[in-house]
Amino acid sequence: MFLNRSLFAGCIVSILLCWFGRAVVAEPAWSIEGEYFEGCTCNPGCPCLFGSEPTHNKTCKISGVFHIRTGNYGQHTLDGQTVIGITDLTAQPDKNWIVFYLDEKAAAVQKNALLDIFKNHVFRFAKVPHDRITVRYVPLHVESSPWRKKAIAANNLTLDIELLRGVGDPGKPTQIVNKNFSLWAKEFDMALNMGKAATHRFQEGNREWNYDGRSGFATAFRFTGK
Image (cartoon, rainbow, N blue to C red; front, side, top):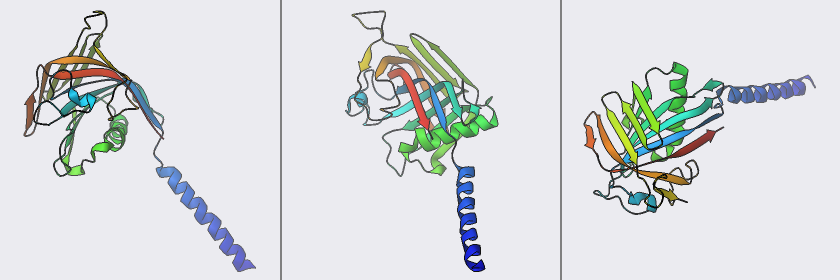
């Protein structure tokens, strides 16, 4: 009888320890929402947004700016933080890469939270191996007005998007409504405000480009995780 009770008690303790261990390492609930804008390789009116091939050598390189208006990672606030992700969406799995820029002024806990969210969730689809992911903490500057979106990351990136005014109603931007684009389909607003890059210049290591005059757009985003 004593042996059976000991075994039963041992099982209960093991179950509790296992549950407690999972609870300790469980990922915090998180949520981020705000404004997204990007510049890319294509001529304005990016055909990728319609499921067609990019306009330049079948290549789609993007600089994507996520400016978080409200956000949290567990008990930690992410309000006002910005993450810039730069990658080649059309690169083969053995050559894909990504560069992340985060604000050097962010607190350590915010940097760790943002890296988890963006490496393991937002850009998880890219499946970029660890050795081809670059993370840099640099001075970030972001501006947003109704017709202009701008981001500067140290001397590495300058992205300045001018939204296109519609001819029918010059007070509203040209839009893609009810978009046909699988990437971040649920997380982005259904309307994309289309634009053109007055400036889109990037340099990091041996990667460098000048996509001035090419395509861009802006929209709202919301990502959540539990």
